[in-house]
Length: 212
Image (cartoon, rainbow, N blue to C red; front, side, top):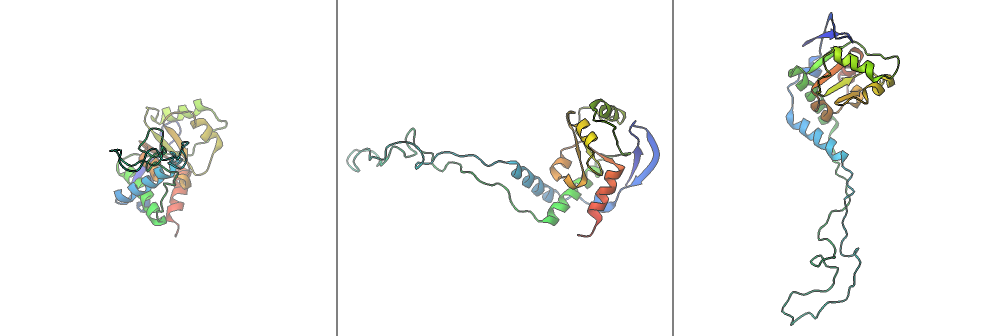
């Protein structure tokens, strides 16, 4: 698959780059993408939910009534969950929602997400973006030139962390910046356009074509 290279003004430079089939030409595996996104969302959960059990609520432990002869159910404590103010029966406890996922499964999931974006024509290539200072206005002019300031989600992938670029894009809604190492399947599937800088594409290919 070939992509035209655009400059930061949105003009076609006349150059074309061939995307690696090993990264952008796979048949997307939906199940592994689902597993990777599921793990990502599970890891975002704090898991701090908690309710008081019957041994944690305040109340008397005196037996309320005699065991037999009242015509009602047996009751031994006001702290029972069947009474108002008692402990909650089988309530939530703090827990970790994370689960293990094999490294090769996660790798395949990200490659599947990249291939899915390429298959849908959602990948664009731009020359390296450099800013002399962190200015949101300058970054917006780049998006306008590339016709990406349309309210849809854009994920810019750069070769390395550029503080000026990150700070310039931080206040723009639906725009995020990442390096190839920080990419995850959730963010890839949650974008409308994957905007690759030339050094970002090079770093991405080096990351996924190196021997494991």
